[in-house]
Amino acid sequence: MLGACLAFVAMQAVVAMARRSGMDTLEVLFFRTAPGLPFLWLGLWRAGHHLRPTEPRDVLVRSLLGLVAMSTNFASMRWLSLVQFTTLNLMQPVFVALLAPLLLSEHVRRSTWVALLLAFSGALIIVTADAAATSIPHSAALLALGSALASAFAQIWVRKATASDPPLRVVFHFAALVSVVSLSAGLMTGRFRGPPEGTSALEFAGLVSGMAGFGTLGQVLMTRAYAIGEAAPVSMVAYSGIAFGLGLDLLVFDHAPTATALVGAGLVLAAGVTLLRER
Image (cartoon, rainbow, N blue to C red):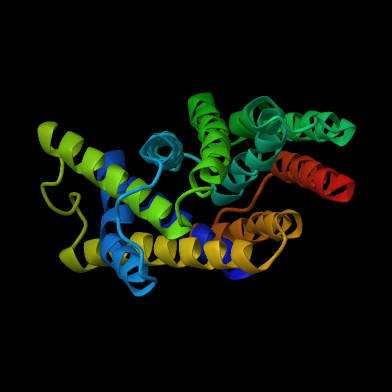
């Protein structure tokens, strides 16, 4: 899981570079998912699984929710620093804890409400004080929060979908849907006309390889982690993404976090610890 977190933060760094070079959100969506499809299919084939879902409706709902989560995710990365994005995205476990009782008939623990208060306080600091201090549009921070909420719904539907279908098949259909929708929408609106202006073919190939390679590696490592470890402690390792985001912000973008960003990150981290201690 630690390797998955590092791979995903590295992917977000490449996505941020791609967005700032002028690559459109639809192009980023396609190049993030399409190159990994052959490897996902090969994994299914080696495991002896076919492509047709056992419960198509649950797989489709999960894929649509994942599409919304990923598109809002990549749209926000044009303006947010890695630590800002990572902190806001880590609202997802709290959203899951809040939504699971409604959608999966699970009991709401008292600690869930405490964690929710801590996490929303941290997110509010990022959205208001830190966004204002760093001249980031509030809409970008709200997009990241929307991505975390959509991702929470998607993760809940992962549990529904994987009750009848193997995880790799669910991931394949999600990646295939994102690839087809982004390519179709992009071609209809005049995207996919080559590298952005000022970006060489070699730089463009590096961006595509980074997004697809780090993204696919993170997905595989995360799936393996949840297969061999308990969900609660494994999910807590995701909070290491805050530290990785801080490091890459400094090394790649020469961006030092503000004090308010660190306070917000600390509150979101406290929310995760609260959820884990109760479990």
